[in-house]
View 1 (cartoon, rainbow, N blue to C red):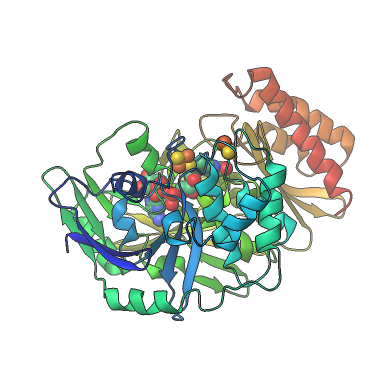
View 2: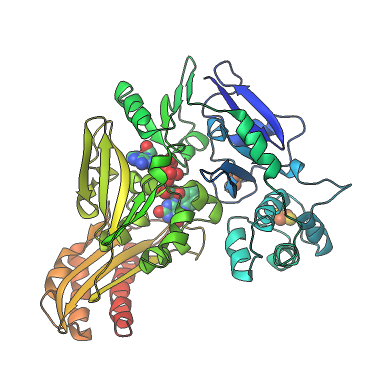
Amino acid sequence: MNSVKFILNKKIISVDLSQGPYGPTTTVLEYLRSQPHLKGVKEGCAEGDCGACTLVLGDLQSNGEVRYRNFDSCLVFLPMLHGKELITVEGIGDSSCLHPVQKAMVDTDGSQCGYCTPGFIMSMYYLYNKKEKASRDEIKDCLTGNLCRCTGYRSIMDAAEQSCGQEKRDNNNFSSQSKKLLDSLGVTDLAIETNKQSYYQPRTLDSALSIMSLNPHARIVNGATDLGLAVTKQKALLESLVDISCVNELKEINIREEGVEYGAGINLEDLRLHCADYFPALQAMLNVFGSRQIRYLGTLGGNIASASPIGDMPPVLMAYEAIYTLVSELGERKVTSREFVTGYRQTVMKENELIKSVFIPFPKNNHHLKSYKISKRKDLDISTVSAGFQLKLKEGLVEDIALIYGGMAAQTKRADNAEAHLRNKAWTRTNVEEAMSLLSKDFTPISDARSGEEGRRLMARNLLLKFWNETQYD
Ligand SMILES: Cc1cc2nc3c(=O)[nH]c(=O)nc-3n(C[C@H](O)[C@H](O)[C@H](O)COP(=O)(O)OP(=O)(O)OC[C@H]3O[C@@H](n4cnc5c(N)ncnc54)[C@H](O)[C@@H]3O)c2cc1C
Ligand code: FES
Ligand code: FES
């Protein structure tokens, strides 16, 4: 099937991507901006940072419900809309009949130049249609991915509180018509071939693996929050893509006696909500990961596979001693998170393999686990230095310790010398301070726009001291 079929503001749309002018890596934003009456959506940064391009996406779930999320349309390729519902600002209200979130924005003077406004409106529209009324914290988190340069956030927050913070909201039957429309689409796997690109979107893991083995050089794509930038920023031509975002087997969560197995395709917002009760250090890291728009697209597997030295998941997953299951047509194998990355953006993954799932064992009572992220600003920023620490104490002595740092080397890396110094010793401030001085042996960090080398060393030392301090109160 070469055509992408989706619902756009309650109308069925079909776009043939094999003929042009659109191709498999045309972004949703580019597509809409080329349409005569859909220019409400705006381009600010084209890299997921400003939220001017925010839209709402509806997915039919296995329980028959439609689930909505706000997302950055500058990062999403057009075929990723296949079988889904897209809502733009034109679909929710107009000057003759404003939606309650639009009315609230007018009432609180929440818009000045107006460039950011459609993006804010769409994030608020998503919040408005959630079952629960939004708390102030929820509103703040949801609007983190929307930037405004001129109005100031107080009036925008007021608008969100007035419209989405109320118990009684007229959002019943929001999705009943959508369900019928989505059902009627009857979508099947996509296989788009143009003279320059191929794009496959399978719906089962078996089918994904067999496409990968037939196309050994194809790139996997899931949320596209990393790969999308290669297109929008580096103008790269991605010749062959296997989009695994519709493979439900990769989104499963299995709670076992010894831990939880998360499908690698789970998005980071679902992971953040689920892991709260089981893995607080993981949730702490996810609370400051990108924005909600980014977390709804980006996946656990995508973050791990990117193997970025400043990726936020690897240090904390290594601290938890997570185990990854890799799969190809030849079968499955397990790799520990601590041996997965082998160098700068290098991993043990072979051609045709993908990450299927991530098993996180429950920590034992004598295990202390924390994660830390230092960045230029709290939200929507990448790490300058990050860390995942695990301490196993036995009768006041360090039975084992893992000090894993991001941003300190070309890959996520353990502080071997500091760890060795602490093992089998008392967990005292004196011993910790000695270990802190050994961190300079463990790392030779770079200087860049985020921090000088000495700044990074200082952050690494102080994070260890902070960890010691916090374990005194566990
Ligand atoms: C605005 C913005 C903010 C961000 N903030 C953060 C942040 O705070 N912290 C952070 O760590 N990152 C951040 N990122 C980076 C990105 O969001 C994450 O790395 C995300 O987890 C990538 O997941 P994805 O599904 O979007 O990956 P994709 O872009 O789809 O893929 C990334 C890479 O992983 C591979 N891949 C994807 N899934 C699999 C799989 N299951 N098996 C094998 N290979 C796979 C792809 O082939 C590709 O090489 C940010 C990105 C943006 C644009
Ligand atoms: S244009 Fe800035 S987030 Fe998409
Ligand atoms: S109103 Fe001008 S950028 Fe927000």
